[in-house]
Amino acid sequence: MSTRAPDRTVTPGPASGPAPVTARRTRPRGSRIALHATLIVLSLLMIAPFVWMALSSLKTRAEIVAYPPTVLPHDWHWANYPDALAYAPFATYFTNSLVIAVSHTVLNVVIAAMAGYALARVEFRGRSLLLMMVLGAMMIPTFTKIVPQYLLAKTMPFFGGNDFLGRGGNGWLDSWWVLIVPGAVTPLAIFLFRQFYLSLPRELEEAARIDGLGEFGIFARVMTPLMKPAIATVSLITFENSWNNFVWPLIVTRSEDLRVIQVGLAAFQQAERTLWEFLMAGTVLATLPMIVLFLFTQKYFVQGFATAGIK
Image (tube, rainbow, N blue to C red):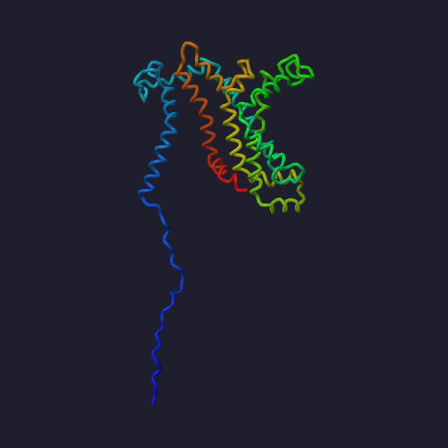
């Protein structure tokens, strides 16, 4: 008598092959629309002053002071730009600002890069103290340093008729020295470079030492070429601060040949009236270099601030 084997129910296991892909959670459409609408409104609010400035530079004086104000000019007065350039030595102001801003940018990038590398990669006694001093200098308000810097510039020995004690003359006042040297290096640039150098892998430095490179060779040929975001960030910040500097050049210069563009714009503001059409045209010309520079460096600028605090 044969016995029948019991039926075995085979439970199917999980199907072989790649696991199912979980659908990515997406933001609700209404939320995305609200976010984009908010960003558009904020962008329009930010760009509105620049648009108003550009449109006002093409209006006549009567139309600028008219009430209620008009948005678009009735008569596009392009002659405001050549008239503004002829009213004051604007070419001299522009050249002076460009020379000072470029000098500050180059000096700040070179000196701050070396200082940041030393604070990040070179072991020496007192490094932590120097870093604390750099951080402390970043916390000092700018306008509290004007009087000490002015006194140092005025009493600079052997300059401007001064003796070895810094007496008897004007020192660096009303000269290129006083416009360039005080802004040659900033603590913020040193700190940003230090943070970027800390983010680079130590293996690059060790491999360069095995190949026989010295400390300066490692800095110049290995590490610094990888610092494009840091260089762009520091360059843009330095150029912007130098280009828009108004108080310091106004205090330390008297000669018309050393006036900068921000001080030169004050020529359109007289005691009895303000030449608004020329002032707006000059302000547009003073703003264009910063807009063009930011458009070319915005990629590295944003990346630089995004990665400055990795370590």
